[in-house]
Image (cartoon, rainbow, N blue to C red; front, side):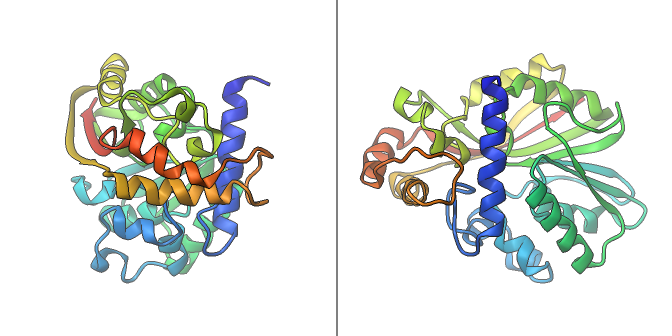
Length: 280
């Protein structure tokens, strides 16, 4: 089994556990479930009429739909669609003449998304199982690609960027919320629990932008940036390391939660949530 396959299985397992265990971060998100939707910039009005489970199981780092100019009748693709919060918001924007497609590799997430879509009574949303490095989507078939704190989890980000370029229609656009990191210490980059919490697999902002350019996308611009302070970092690093000693995650390894502060000190000012847009 390759390292890439191991990482994908690890992440899928962690997120599958996260969505099925109530009230726990369980290696699935930087903070306990439900809190992330508010931290990520979803307004009370946006989430007021969404299914409770879609909001409670939101593990993103931003609200990509809020910043996009999605119009009625368009096709939107969400990479790593999870429990479906962004699918539901995008579905409202495209209307019944449009279509929203979610792609996720985790069975538990797909099942939860389908439940939330049914509860919302939507008929213009479809969820497909697949990897974001090899999207089950036709060439030049979507107007928008969105994603919420998912690409950092991929061990093959160049393939993801190329897939975005492939599936976008000419003139189509992407808007992605994600985590970037500068100069990760080796002990953090190698920490398997911090991978699923969107830290250990993150690349620099410059590398992210360069990767999109190399994939053939244009007008690549970071339109928003939130640099995490030490208190924010310690909060979600601590929650991840505490869960690492439980049976929640797939790995048998454990990490002393007391190192959360030391990790946070090393990472202060180096971790940011960004929104990046580009066009084909």
